[in-house]
View 1 (cartoon, rainbow, N blue to C red):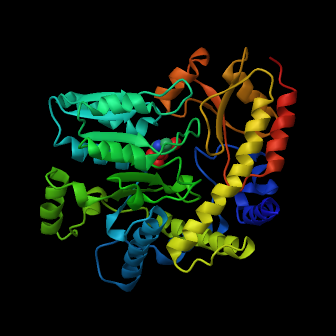
View 2 (cartoon, rainbow, N blue to C red; view 1 turned 120 degrees about the vertical axis):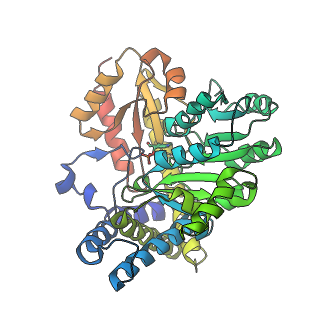
Length: 421
Ligand SMILES: Cc1ncc(COP(=O)(O)O)c(C=O)c1O
């Protein structure tokens, strides 16, 4: 019963995405969602409306400018409700990579010879490379390895923590294999060892509810364009353990002196933001709130009263529907003769190869049958070079979101029947 209701709810939600219309996408099945999502109409309309009627630059007093500034404040509040925190702990930015680089840059000022930073083999390079660069300053950087099954090796992590790292940088969900990390547990272990935590939430955020305060982490980043929005990034900064770090000291002195506000976020939120993207992502959040309200009504869930509650209900319901997709997708891929699947996906992101077939040929086979799926290593290089060693670290990745359907998975099954080894 619940399954039928979920299928019907998300069939209707798909209608909000013009890019998925046959006439707009030429009938392709869009399975490249972990690279970036399509947008609901309201987000597209709000972006256009901003550029048509509200375009103004910050830093003065005229009314249109003030409205634009209010929109930026409202965006921080919206992102805070999405991530599970409050607005003054949010910084907006270009994308996740640049925000992580800025965080590493600032935290790196306090690190030097002999200090240890841990990264994770499960991560995208965005949360690996900026830490590795600190080697220039004599910082030691070690990687928490993965197990042969593709999960984070918690025993090895425990052993590395005995060396008392200053920072543990890790991710919530692998963008390559959909593998889920227990963020609260990894963070608790890091804090017990005296380290700060920097969490890449990019790949998990479109699939599952986020709760950064409950996880008790120190930094988190997400990309709006993976969460059905325009191209911009957002960071969460928890100041409570930053005492004694220069980022904490500098923000209060410099930002205060230049009248830029004294929040920790101000140090990361540089220059002029993507105002039209902000307007658009506020539209995305309105769509998600609508989804949360509709889900509560249709599935007889508790009525959500606040925006945070509506967003939580939306993301929980998305998570439930995506489990239906994941079960079907795993079955279809595992039934393909010779298929090798990597990791243990907890969200519908599956990377796979076919024994004896070059990854590129498999991708072309799918393209010829109307599928947009990614091939390569998706910059999850540390795990992919290991897991897909026999295929030069590459695999075909199919990644689905809540607007994908069981019928599209069935179409994948048919397309794979004609594949030649
Ligand atoms: C897990 C993960 N982290 C970081 C990034 C980089 O995000 P951005 O393009 O916002 O810099 C990606 C992009 O694919 C990703 O999947």
